[in-house]
Image 1 (cartoon, helix red, strand yellow):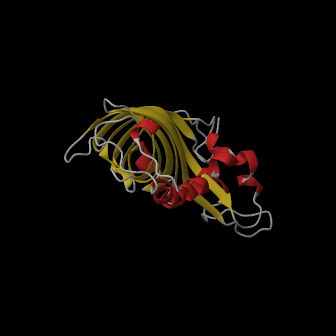
Image 2 (image 1 turned 120 degrees about the vertical axis):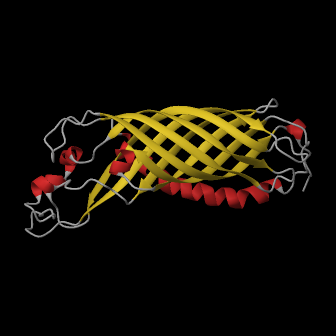
Image 3 (image 1 turned 30 degrees about the horizontal axis):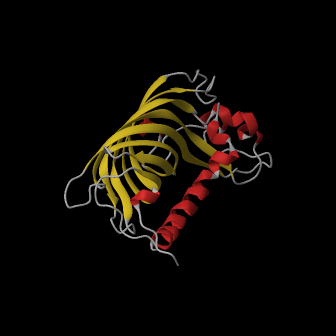
Amino acid sequence: MDILSNPNIVSLKNFGLTLIVSLFIISPTALHAQRTPAKGPIGISLLTATGTITVPAGDLAERFGPHAGISLNFARKTVAHWHFSFAAEYQFGQDVREPGLFAGITQGTGNVISEAGIYADVISRMRSIQIWGSVGKLIPMWGNNKNSGLLLQLGAGIWQHKIYLQNQGFFAPQISGDYLKGYDRLSGGPFLRQSIGYLNLSNKKLINYYIGFDFTQGFTQGQRGLNYDTGLPDNENRLDLGVGVRIGWILPFYRREDRDFIRF
């Protein structure tokens, strides 16, 4: 199933960007009226919006270049410093590395001919979605804030990526509708992720962020029955790898007993 073609998934990019901006606005306003929480370890629910830059490796690097991503993460940190999370990420990029993708329908010119007899304006982009869960351990590093420190995580989930093709010019039936499926290289499967980073939950509740590195291994497979440009089945097993930098802004939700409210 092509999850990436769902318009609700595609709109996640705009939603995520809006959410990141909203968290920057809401966090200082919503938390300004709360006094400093206890400095000992406490259980906290966390809502995090993150941005990522990923450098691909393995089979993924043969198809795509570096790409960006936005994600939404729901997590729970326990008193014992265990960290449980569930996240979804939408990835996008402009570097597509599939030479000769339309060789069979361009007659050697490299350009697709529209039904009007002139060149169509076809763009190719990278699109990907990842959904995963993680378990981690927080290791307080320094100072008297026992809710911040080094965060180590292991995660697993599902991954789907493809070449997004769009004709911005005159209509070309050979790359329209279901014909696009013969060129988009849709692939999907399970993946593993290891992450290491720093989680900061401010005692004053105003600056809450995460910054770290991700190491991803995807065990994917082609999902299309046939690639039209090669005439071969698209069912090869793939090892899609990536190394990424992740930066997130966090909105924490404390229990009533862990905070003091000030009436306005």
